[in-house]
Length: 267
Length: 51
Image (cartoon, rainbow over all chains, first blue to last red; front, side, top):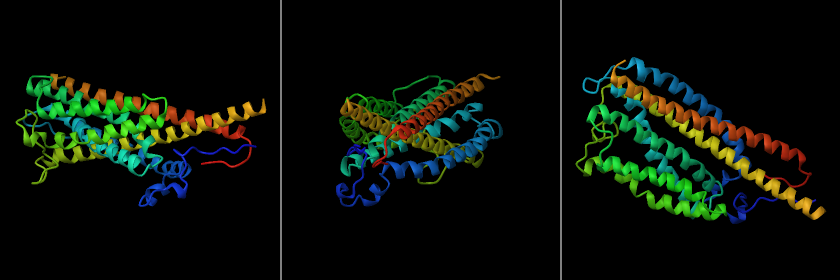
């Protein structure tokens, strides 16, 4: 009987592991990844459910309205975590792309491919919730200031990556093109972060991650941090779940191919 | 309900719809792949396997 062998993109033979990437490649075996992620994933779902179960009622019902923004401040409890996830997610995408390009990590390509639609979704939600906050507070849905424009560019980068990796017949060519785009686009992340410091923008400067410590009152800061932790756990669980599905789908294609070859040789 | 609450409701509603859709899609893909993989694994002849 012909043996079913994994292609180089999913195998992790020690002979092909580049120097310095041993630890990374230990977790590159699809079987090991499925086992480990299968153990981690239920905890991530539970953690996100717990944190959002506490954070969302706290943000929507228990926290006080802001003295300037009134009830509209409650949009911040979803807008700010989405902004943080959009940026930190993109840094993760760039790191995964670097691992795929430099060390040829077998799962980094699949991870990046599954990360970008979720990243695009949270960035779109960040823009939409920001717009919904801006209308009552600024009197406009949108302004072309440095922060808003750089986040819009970040959204286009996410969508561009998601489209580019799926645009080729050969998955590996798409992954390589996407990885290059992700690395080049990483230049935009510090632009997003520091746009409110370097430019005169309508968007307010950072009020949590800043040198002098958070400027928010604890009544607003604590539910914000709980919501951010909850959304981060949910984001991680979603990306992990999608990556697990992608690994299994790749395995299915290999088995179907092997089955077709067997039938062809038997005929 | 004040006008501010409408904006708050739409923002959180969008979040719920978006994350609900992502969650449903992830669970659907995972369960479909697991089912299909189990079916193919049982049909496969014995021999070297991976992963």
